[in-house]
Length: 119
Image 1 (cartoon, rainbow, N blue to C red):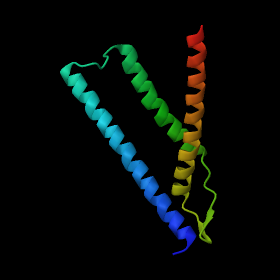
Image 2 (cartoon, helix red, strand yellow):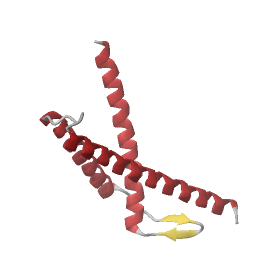
Image 3 (cartoon, one colour):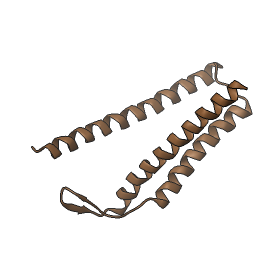
Image 4 (spheres, rainbow, N blue to C red):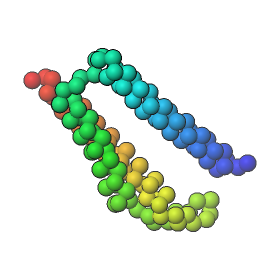
């Protein structure tokens, strides 16, 4: 097995672990939120918190849709062979662009919150 094959194998395992961890975190969060709502716990039921939740979910879905539509579908050479599956090329590009946008949004929000606290 060559170095490129080992690197590809490691990257596939790391992506699998990351996806499983992300799905597990979403399920865990949903279970905790549902339990808190049933027990009347610390989940705020006011309209503002609910609106923020819906706006966040909708904004994320809209971001993923827009970045999928603008993503590139140019073929790539992988192990000397052209990869031309348009859907998977767009999907990979969508995640790269969305991640970059979300990182920029997080940094801007952090800077905004730090400047607002000082006043």
